[in-house]
Amino acid sequence: EDKVVQSPLSLVVHEGDTVTLNCSYEVTNFRSLLWYKQEKKAPTFLFMLTSSGIEKKSGRLSSILDKKELSSILNITATQTGDSAIYLCAWDQFYFGTGTSLTVIP
Amino acid sequence: DGGITQSPKYLFRKEGQNVTLSCEQNLNHDAMYWYRQDPGQGLRLIYYSQIVNDFQKGDIAEGYSVSREKKESFPLTVTSAQKNPTAFYLCASSTSGAPYNEQFFGPGTRLTVL
Image (tube, rainbow over all chains, first blue to last red; front, side, top):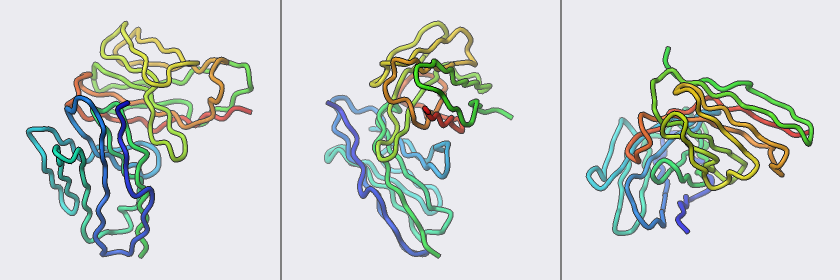
């Protein structure tokens, strides 16, 4: 059965720390992997990674896809309290992981 | 402003009742989706539609029904056959149903069965 697994489930850090969130996927036919940020209700899109685009960066956030290891990481540098949220990864927009809950303490 | 709206924000239902959750988008997107989110379980796909008058079941479609009569609307009915309907429901849309399109999410409806 195809599935997406995220780790850690939750994380508490201090402002200024750097965090790395993990997403591994066990799928039979990889096409795209997406990262979303869910602060209160509606998830908002962060990045999409595909075979032709394995690295994305936007400000303090960056993401890399490792097709060989069937995994992806989301890095956040110099964290701020506004980064506190649940971070979700999804395979092919249909299958979501359980999410990583990030709390950034001032 | 373009976006997705869901209503109501909160919904309370008695056991044995059917309820319908509304989802409307004005983004001119072809594809629309319904997810259910429970604590610690992420988002699970209930139904999706890639085009008007066509929809497919997701992993947890039992006890739910949908319709797609108009491009901008994708209502979800939670029937009395759904054994544990209390959850947070999210609607989303994307340009098309292809796997290379980000989804835009609505604000969600929290359903509680009394």
